[in-house]
Amino acid sequence: MQLLPAIDILNGKCVRLRQGDYGRETVYADHPVEMAKHWVHRGTGYLHLVDLDGAKDKKPVNQQIVYEIVKAVNIPVEIGGGIRNEKTIQDYLNAGVDRVVIGTLAFKEPEWFQKMSEQFPDKLVLGIDARYGMVATEGWLETSQTPAVELAQTFLDFPLAALVYTDIAKDGMMGGPNFGEMAAMQEAVPFPVIASGGVSSLDDIRKLRQLGLSACIIGKALYEGTIQLEDALNIATAQ
Image (tube, rainbow, N blue to C red; front, side, top):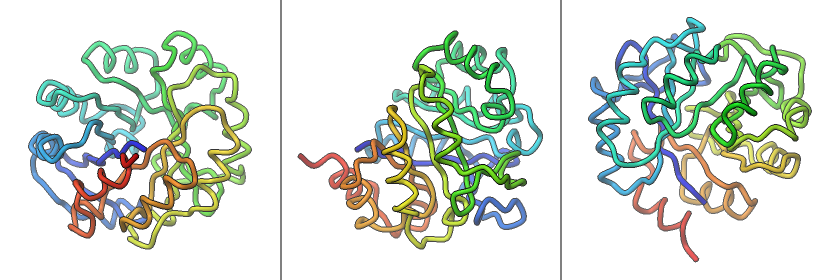
């Protein structure tokens, strides 16, 4: 199983939000590029970046910082947040980003998303964020009446690289992931599912691996020191 340290960028800084609430942020580093280098030095093989300002403003805001991170590290990165058109996707890929995460627009404009996935095969990641299994959109500011698994199944034939499934109710709360929802999502789709939200212990990582998840994103637990990246990598990659 792959581990992806999260670097969430808000106002140019590396932060974490509690349950997706922009009013409940903790700043962990003034320089996201240095944080990216730190996680690479600790052994990670992939980084998950989020432009939180972009997610809220519906357009990229921290693109330059993302470009600087790509130049500074020798591992692949993926980026999500505020990606609403073909040009932004192309710009990120041209800059060396490995994968682009599309959330809100994927189910608001599924025909557009299908076209983009076919134009950039295995380069787009479907980002589904949910509260208690119901899809949330617009940078987590709105919650719909659509079940997350039901939404995911409308994209089964798209040539996607992966699906990032975030349980907002668990995110930043250090209470463990929503294992049931994560397992149900992995069973429902043919592409790799990346679990996000609530990973707070080595046992959480062990259980996600046992459930067959292809990867998990770790945020607050790494920044608070409750999980050491080296220990997590040992569990995730053990034979």
